[in-house]
Length: 219
Image: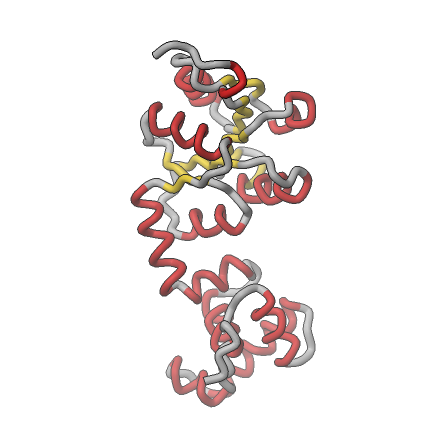
């Protein structure tokens, strides 16, 4: 494959905690002339002005999700392609919520990663087949997991109670559905109030619905 016109070659910034992987990824992206790696540190974004950032999620000194979210806030329009070795089902959803444009495992081949980089740089979105399947399951049936991602300070049970509250269920109905006592549900609600820094159920439900939980269903 011959080198492409420079105007069509995306400028890539790599953020990854493993020097060997960074070097291998740089070589793979540049070997065909399909991409140009301009830096290997997040601090170089302003200086190098990349077209796309390739972000590892499990960084040694922080979370790639947090870095992706900050990039979306500080530099809207700069697309991020996330790479990870994690098998955690929550990771694709968290990346999507942080405005990542793509999510691939590090086991992806060089051609697949190059295609993803070019697609994301051009304004598209790329999620591998397995990731797309996992996302479909999470978005269609993973409400409790979604609540945990949106409100990470909550326990799994508290997230479930908040989701049911957002769907318009009172403590008695929630207790019946979860096979718990009303007193236990009240305790969970108290903890939810403390963690969300609200004082009433109406405020808690409003926070949940603003985040997309409940869909306004009062049934």
